[in-house]
Image (spheres, rainbow, N blue to C red):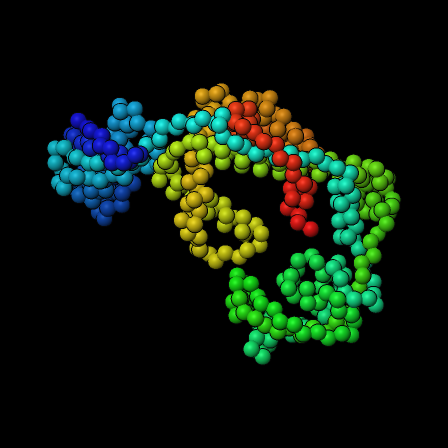
Length: 435
């Protein structure tokens, strides 16, 4: 006999027992199997008497068989009680005598919550929109020209976008701090390489001029010795160089990969690339808005076991991303999974909500949708057909695309049922460029 106790909103405890007789035959078979390769002094492998094998391997065999039977018994009880188990159960043997006729145990576990999506018809959702303009194309071309600028000496005062060469010395309480001094240091103003207050102190200086100013470092500055502290910088301007931008001509266009140097073709390429990137970013942000709306209308408790597992997964993914960006991580070091608990909880809840919505509204990814999304993604590569074949060659890659389509279907469903307000977004804001 078994019974189920409710310990909390999602936590349950199974009380059950396993007949000792049920284990004996399997334990004997397990001991004999071990004996086939067991090395016991005085006996050849496979010829060790059962009694000796039982003395040497009996406890191990009993524990292994009991572990298997605990899992089998738990699975049967979960099925019999129509329980959808979340995560892995925590077993506890209650019987002290492992040879007792009945081995009583408990299994503490969590179940999946019942997901009831709230009324989205009253939920307000902001949907971002974007229209690519000729001005956006021109700004992108200007950026490309600035990236290829040639710097020439100037007699005027330094301003943003100039390249300067300076000597500088920074003192904290009258003493030069570590990293606070350099000679003939090259710096392009306005690109964010140095702190804004430091560059502000340089603006307006001419070659040959010396200037001193006070500056307070941010409290979160990576140099702990000066973080949050006031220092005095002395700057000597050695050289001011103004940028000379290349002309928008055939030579410039060829340098950007347009073989015939046609400016119109370059603009078309830029327009297409910006359109794809803008649509991708709009899609991501609108999806985030939609998911936030679903979370807002759905009261849901996330199983702790799933949150812990997802926290570990996000932590590992974060560390891989850090290594991919060149961050050196000491061997064996791991970030605390608790750092990612909030993000993991949100992901688990959304996963449960999406699963419920898909079932209730038949929002599964259709083959033609998967094919279309792959084709769309492949267009940003030089050889689209190779990308299509790459996805088709691996079922896991196709599943990733299916999940993206499924999310798109949910977003479309929500936008069709919620109170949607369209909000135009500017190019600079969308691309994360505040300049």
